[in-house]
Length: 254
View (cartoon, one colour):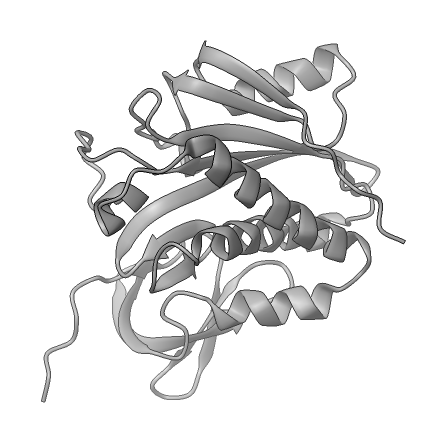
């Protein structure tokens, strides 16, 4: 039986990082599952490996969502990333075409980045005790000044202004749906949906791993979240995050 999730939204005018703020609150207080820490302005937003997340104050969505997935073993922790990215995909796909999930946890339109997530887990006795899911979505920003190569926003893509609170509600509703499916053990359904919208799935492209550049195609993601790439010779390689790079430059046509 599903247990519903209520999203209490804590609005912050300014904070360095909503993930840092959420983690400090979990340490100091009793924070209900589903609590959202939303920042109007995030001055030191973090991406994967402490990359900087650029967001103009009041123009986008920068927030952290708290879960207590104590039913999830460590080896299955990537399922939470699937749940969150699928929720974002579902909510935003009605606004833009060509939306895809770029492994491991970015939201792309074509070759441009619309959003990303950063999940920080606390582990106890081999299970996930708590998870803080940091989410950044580019909504109404039209100028990006950082050195990031490919940011884009809903506003740029559609030439429309969006109500950030409405988008937030839609995203949370969709994430909650998939999280409840995960809690009910519907891993196979989640896996199928995740793979079906994976960026560059079954497409021939160039990849770089260590010093080798090779042609291959993404065929999926394994149980522990590694990307599976099949080379032209049929060999299947598996990669952890940062072990392989997507090469944007296309191969020359024949």
